[in-house]
Length: 79
Image 1: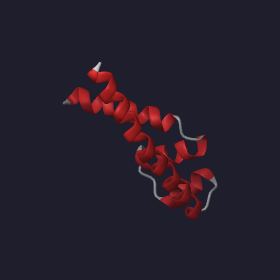
Image 2: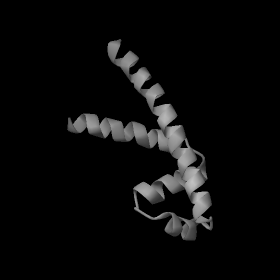
Image 3: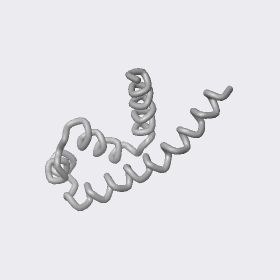
Image 4: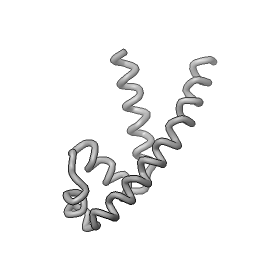
């Protein structure tokens, strides 16, 4: 179970790394550092509205890519 969680974290981190730099930065500020939109805006020079838009875009991209990764993993496990 611990290994499965670590594998999932590794896959998710790989997907985050494929995001554009600004979106990747916002995802890390939000989930690794727990910053609010206003705090992320202060760090990046963006408005809180732009932070929200870009973070939403990044999370949508991750959600879309995650099922594709799961399908590939199932195929690998079946081999």
